[in-house]
Image 1 (tube, rainbow, N blue to C red):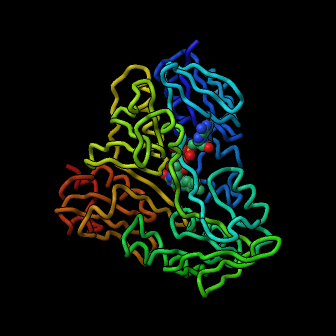
Image 2: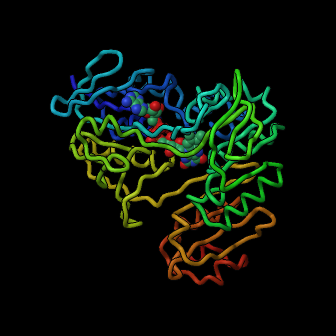
Image 3: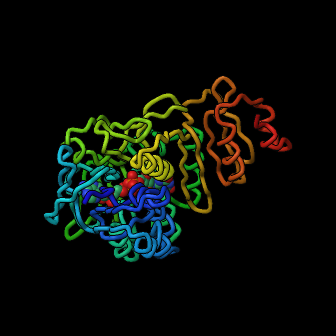
Length: 401
Ligand SMILES: Cc1cc2nc3c(=O)[nH]c(=O)nc-3n(C[C@H](O)[C@H](O)[C@H](O)COP(=O)(O)OP(=O)(O)OC[C@H]3O[C@@H](n4cnc5c(N)ncnc54)[C@H](O)[C@@H]3O)c2cc1C
C-alpha cells in the first residue's frame, strides 16, 4: 500500500505530517528521520535549551501522543539512502523499501565543517541537534575559556549563554564585522557593543588556522594569534542536504529547486525547509532560507498540494534571535533598503530600524519591539512618510493603508 512519506524529522517534517491530517488525509503517513528524537525545535538549542532553562519536553514540536493519536508513524534513527522515482519507492538504512504515493523531502541542512589542522580534537563542537547540545553541556561546566568560531546568530546566542554562565568567552569572526552576512553595519555595531558590555571578547577579520592540545583542545590558532580554549563551538554556516535529491535526478542548484507549490522537478516529490531553492513572488526572486517560519509554511503548502491542492507559497521572510534579554525580530532583507529610519531608543535597547526603498518599507530589525515587528509585516511594500515612522506619537497602525 502507498503512503505519504516524509524524509526528515525536523520542523518541516513534523509540520507536514500534522498538516496532511488537518487537510483531511486519512491514509498512511510515515516520517523517516535519522535523528533519534521526535521532531523538535532547533532555535532553543542555542538559547533556552542550551542554558538549561527549558527541558526536552518544551523543545519537542509536539508531544509524542500527538503523532500516536493521529496515526502518524515515525521511524527514528533511520536514514533514507535512495529514492527511486520511477518505482515510487525509497530505500532506508534499515534495509526497508517503502512505497510512496507522494514524497516530501524535508532533509534540512547540516553544519559547515571547519577545515583546519587538528579540528578533530575533543572539545571542538558543532550545534545542530539535541545530541550536540548534550555533548556541549557535558563539557561546559568544567570549561574556563569558551571560544566560538563564527559571529553569526548561532555563535552570538551561544556567546550570550556562555558568558551569562560565567565563562570567559571569545568570538572569532572571519569577516570585518559580526553578522555581516545578515545585517547592516549599524546593527552589527549595536550587537558588538552589547556583547562587549557583557565581557565577550570579539575578534573580527580573523580566520582560524588550526588548534593545539593533547587530550583535548587547548588553543585556537589564528595565524600569529593563539586563544586559550577548553571548549570550542563552531558556527560557520550550514550546507543544505540535497545529495539524496541530486542522486535521484531531481533538479538542484544551491538547494532542491521547487516551484511555488513546493513541487520539485518530479511532480510526485515535494520539498520544504532549509533544503529548498524556492521562488518568492513578493520579493520577486529565488531564495534559500534558513528559518523556522519558512520551513513551517512550506510544509503547510506542500501538504495541501500533495493532496492535489493548488496552494502557493508567498511569505515575507522573517526570523528572530534571542541574546541576553533582547529579542531581535526581522522581516525582509535590510540590504534591500537604501534608507534607514530608527523608531525608539537605541540606548534603552528598545528600537526598530525600518529600511526603505523609494520610501517603501522593505525590512525591519526590531529589538524588544514586538509591536513594530508585527505592524511592519503589514506595512511591507507600502509607501510611508519617514517623519511619521520615527515619531513615537504616531500610532504605527494608522500608517497601514
Ligand atoms: C542552533 C540553531 C538555532 C536556530 N535558531 C533559529 C531562530 O532563532 N529562528 C529561526 O527562524 N531559525 C533558527 N534556526 C534555523 C532553523 O532551526 C531551521 O531553519 C529549521 O530547523 C529548518 O527546518 P527543516 O525541517 O528544513 O530542517 P531540519 O530542522 O534541519 O530537519 C531536517 C532533518 O532531516 C534529517 N535528515 C536529513 N537527511 C536525511 C535522510 N536522508 N534520511 C533521514 N533523515 C534525514 C536531518 O538529520 C534533520 O534531523 C536555528 C538553527 C539552529 C541549528
